[in-house]
Every structure is written in C-alpha cells, then in structure tokens.
Length: 320
Ligand SMILES: Cc1ncc(COP(=O)(O)O)c(C=O)c1O
Image 1: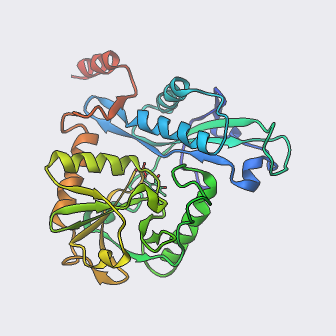
Image 2: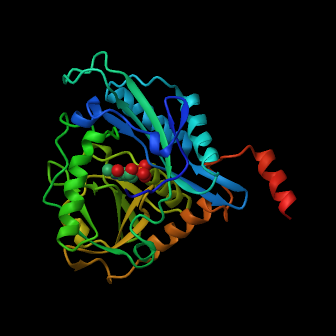
C-alpha cells in the first residue's frame, strides 16, 4: 500500500493510528461520492511551521458542506484547531493537510437522511505536486475533450468528492496523451481550469482569469495571486476567456495548493509566448514563495503558526 503519511489521523475528534483509520465498504460516500474536502499546505518558515490561509480553507470547507447539504458536526473553531492539532501530533513539520467530511455508514439508499456525517483529517508528505522541474521549467498541457458540467448540474463552488470524477477524466486523458495536465472548458466553451488548478493568462502585462461563473473552484491560491499581482500594480481581470486566448497569451500559469504556481509553456503543442517561463510568472512565483517560506513579511496575515508564537520563539532561542 502506498503510504503517503505517517502517525495519526484525526477521526471524529480522536486520533487514530494510520492503520486503523478505516470506514465500512457500505458507507454512503463510497457509492455516491458524498464528501467534501480540502487540500491545505503547512510550510516551514524561520518562525516554525505555519499553515497557509487556514482560515479561508476552513471557511471553504464549511461553505462546501452547506452547498452539499452535509451537516458537519464540527464548527469553524473546532475544525481550525483540529487541523493545527493534527499537524502537531504528526511531528509539526511542513506537510499537506487533507480534511474530509463524508456521509458514513447506516443505509445505502441515495437519500442520505439519517446517515451520519463523519470527519477525518490526515497529513501527507506531498512534495511538489507536478515536480520541481514543473515549477522551474513549466509544463505541457492540452485542452481537454472533457468539459466542466453546466451550471445547475454540479456545484463547482463546492469542493465535493463527486466533482472529481470530471477532474480524474481530464487528468487521465492528458497524461495518457503525453501531457502533464489538461485544461477544461466550461459548457459554453470558455476556459475554466485545470483538473486541480485555477488558470491565469498574461497578455501585454495584464492578468486575466476565468470568473466564478465558468464552473471553477474559488481557489485560495488564485485569490492570493490576484492580491500579490495587485500589490505589484498589475491589472487583474476576472472574465470569460475564449479558448484561443490561451494560444496567443504571452504567459499562462496554473495556481493551486498542490501545484502552487506552475508555468505552462505549451498548450496543444503550441508554444506560449517564446515557450519559456515568462517574467510575470517568475515575479509572482517569487513573491508567493517569499511569503509562504517566511522570507517576506506576511503583510496579509496568511500564515497561521502551528505552535503558539511564544513557544516557537522559546524553541528558537534555545536552539541559538
Ligand atoms: C478543481 C480545482 N480547481 C482549483 C484548485 C485550486 O484551489 P486552491 O488554490 O484553493 O488549492 C483546486 C485545488 O484544490 C482544484 O481541485
């Protein structure tokens, strides 16, 4: 069994050993994808491990629950503390945090009324999602033949397990055809996003990214990049983006918790700009990594220390 984590998994308020974190095969979620989840990163900073935008991730998890009509038994504060607690319990180091809220085991009818809602939080040792090379040199992607679903079919503002069959098909098609990732169009043919990333285009120094109406996840990295770009005085537009705008952009890049800021250097085998990582992408990548790795002041309050500040400072004093 691939083992991407170690230590304990938080399940319904208790820490359970990795091997024992099991659910019944007849759980509702196994059959109907009835879950919502988050992907969050904790980074190593000079002041200790800190979770990136934990507040926004907990908010989005609860928003997803509301949209999916999942009655989460834990509130904001409990989930917030449980996520930090799980990182601490598993060694307090940089990691990827995966909370999931899901319908459990009671009855197998599609109607979930009365089925318990369970919560688990794991930490994983995920390095760079598409590899360090992808971050440095960029990746080759294709426009997928799979589209995002129409509005009023699947709720793309929610990060639900069920939505990710669409993402799996996009990713599998791309990888099978020799690309690193795929870009989905929305039902109207406008650019939506990658299988697990939001997308930005740069043309003549202006950034554009699809609107929330194009069946995209409201990405927290997307929001962070929009803020950093505005800090740099760049114009950022949220707009409907026709497919062909991809081909004539000067630069294109993906954003996401897993993918961070990944440059795209070819789409459908056409070079984007000069086919190399562009200067705006590089500047934004640097600004992003400077904040999350603690080299730049956290002026937007994005980093949430896993240990109480005083404890981190005491440990740092002891070590010096
Ligand atoms: C479909 C999809 N779009 C976008 C994103 C990026 O969102 P975030 O930056 O919040 O990780 C993700 C990653 O979770 C995703 O799965």
